[in-house]
Length: 128
Image 1: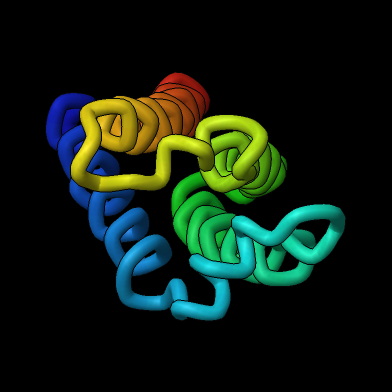
Image 2 (image 1 turned 180 degrees about the horizontal axis):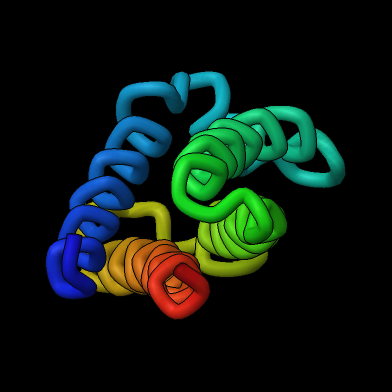
């Protein structure tokens, strides 16, 4: 497989991984739990992010097992971004989807997740 095809395959794989993790496997309990004040967010958010990192781990292990640590990068980036987006004291205060601020925060969250995936893909391609 040439580099362009390989990158394209990884982009499609990570789009599917993101959809599966964020929309199919994220329960209402996880989504709502991420917004809890204090330390109440920790378990639901950790479980949600663990799903992301496990899927990244599986993908990475199929491509280049020596890059297993990229699953930890995905875990950390997703954990911090989702907490920032969900915490009512941070971007979570923009929780009204009728307001533009909600969509800006949502879009920023999605952009960070995609940039994380691009970094992982870049590592997989350059360390092939």
